[in-house]
Image 1 (spheres, rainbow, N blue to C red):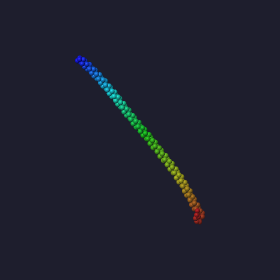
Image 2 (cartoon, rainbow, N blue to C red):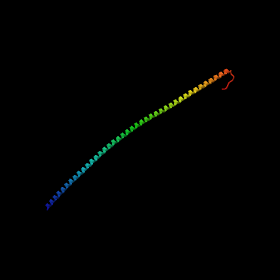
Image 3 (tube, rainbow, N blue to C red):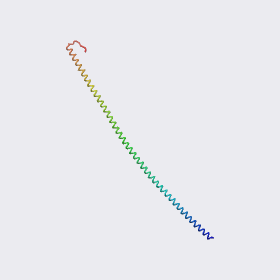
Image 4 (tube, rainbow, N blue to C red):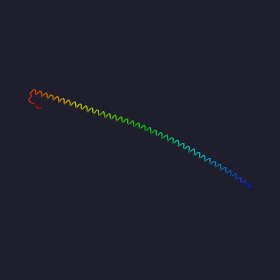
Length: 154
């Protein structure tokens, strides 16, 4: 009976040892699975971090390009505004020159009119002077012929 119990205990011990071995194997498998999952998560996290870094780099490049484009647009706009200002100044100078030319023509016309009036007035005054001289001569001639008979009114 002792031998039967001893045999039973050996069988029980073998069973327990076998179950402990199975449990250790299962635990090792589970630990390996946990480590494998952790490694996968770590790899996925690293890949995600790399994608974020690439996205940040691309965003920085895009921002830099947009800034460059904006700066170029501002430069072109500034040059365009400078050109428009130059054109406006040229038009202003041309307009002022046209106004001065028109004023000069008007002054020349007025000067010519004044000169013509002065010539006309001089001719009229000359004619009046000659007429007065003729009258004075005629009067002197009449007085000389008439011997001073008195003055007649015109």
